[in-house]
Image (cartoon, rainbow, N blue to C red; front, side, top):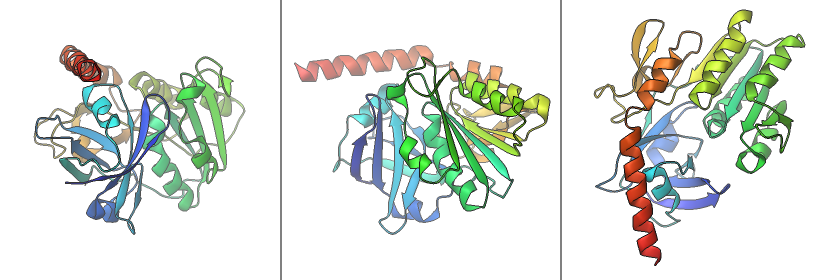
Length: 280
């Protein structure tokens, strides 16, 4: 059973875990993910591999406590063990020297884009990272990104840090100012990714979105992660998770991601009540 080697609290909802998984650490590439199961009664959830250290045999996962399983994971500590960590899964990000690459991370999407931004920089790209969150306390990885990106632009919905507004506002501003952009890739909430696609579409800028559909087995067998891309059904776990953002049906993706929202709410409420009972 893989062991949690180190846990770091990034903010009130987000934790960074270093987990012992030597084979995954050795093979993983930017853009790939793992599927974890905390215990024999747990659900399977996908998490992006934010980083890896092949020499130590560890992978890094950055987790936002939103639902029952992610909150349960964030309550674990160094030394605890996880039942299953399966990966690396998904297709690696296509990396080449595009020229000027703009990487966009909204909320926890920053953790998804972090290894991709670094891979693009290593391939010789000029990399601008647009980093956004609802408020300053929810921003993550700012210092790490400034360590290798050519520029990091920051915005918050409430204006508490950086520019007030959305990540797409900063991207639109760059385009309107005539800055040459050769490639855009982003991850974040579905409405953000849809807005990203619509921002670049009129200008013909190649744009890729890393999708976050419901996922179960990660092998293309269950069909839970199917998405519509250019009128063709794709499976995000084996065909993605990255697709041409201009071809993705984001409205359908939004509807499918809400398919189990009632069950997710019930599971979270039960877990929180259990935690309260354990506290008192």
